[in-house]
Length: 464
Image 1 (tube, rainbow, N blue to C red):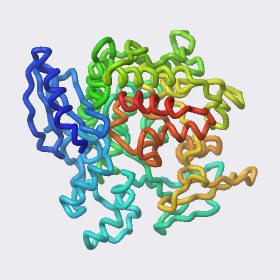
Image 2 (tube, rainbow, N blue to C red; image 1 turned 180 degrees about the vertical axis):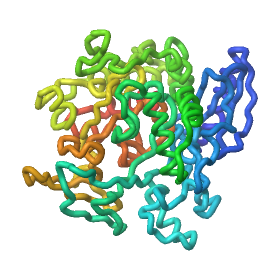
Image 3 (cartoon, one colour; image 1 turned 135 degrees about the vertical axis):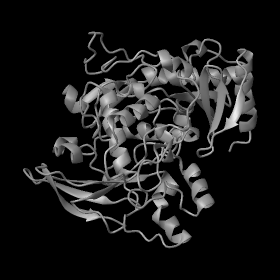
Image 4 (cartoon, rainbow, N blue to C red; image 1 turned 45 degrees about the horizontal axis):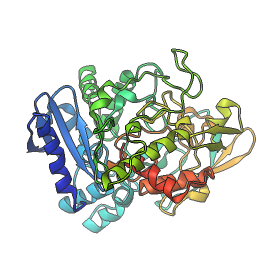
């Protein structure tokens, strides 16, 4: 924990007191999450390297006795096993390592069906379990087992699995659990969109996903009922999570800024809002200035607080306006029929003040290319059955759901709010910090960010 964190937490509590709300800190009985209860509200603080993130819900205090916090399967897991408030409503390697050391690797999150490098991994001793759960402990990756669907346009031509398990009937795909907060802003459910069923109602998709997760991750033999699904979805869609304090810039909702989770409750969103491809149902054209949270801090300089706030505002301006020549992105360049798109960060992160894409548009950024493969991930060689063309990838992504060659290695972009609380980043945890995320995009698209621009952009992302 950052040495300044206790003082920062006191600053948040003092801010509550400034509003005449008063606050009492209660320790949650579940996974050590700190609940800060104030009248008519409920906060969960997530201390991180950059500051403090916070959860609010308009429904009042979070009820940790609800189904989200209860085991309904056969292996001891609940939704909260992989979606921890103090870790950005997902899990982080640091939090997982603490749980492993405390329980000897027997906490319910450590289960071989999807937590280990292989369902057949040796779990007989603490050290064996440490090896079995290596990817979970180092990168926060859960193993997703999906086979090549019947009638697919491709076949498995080769597999290099360091764990000796993957085959055409079940590829091992290692992915970060997505956060279970800010779900009102979703346009697609799961990295590969496999729970995006209706294209119209995210609540219906989330209800289906809640059952799939309970039967899969928690190994419940029979489905949960409609009332149970609705309770879980109602809980999740009432959670608003964002960074609330930055150790440099201070409280993020001061002096005209609209940071923190409270404004999210009234942030406009509907499927297609500000869509890059022109799918906004209101007919409004795409506006690249999609992020306006910190516009009031533009131009600030002088003391250390204003310098930090000015950097956040400059980063937001770069996110909206820095020119990027977007090329070779499967799912975007082909959709627009343009080999090169003259865009910005908001071309793909267009949902206003939230940062995901407002329609389901999974993209291939090259994150799973063989050139980026690390030795701890499987590598698959897939062959197009019609053309004979091959591709090597660590994760076929959307293609394993649709069976289509054009969907190879495509993944959705996540909601960006609360990023600082949930490293590492990308679906495969390949970036350990937000500075590495900026470096990836700088190299991928030859943007040419200066050192100052990289620093400013990272400051903005940490403040979301």
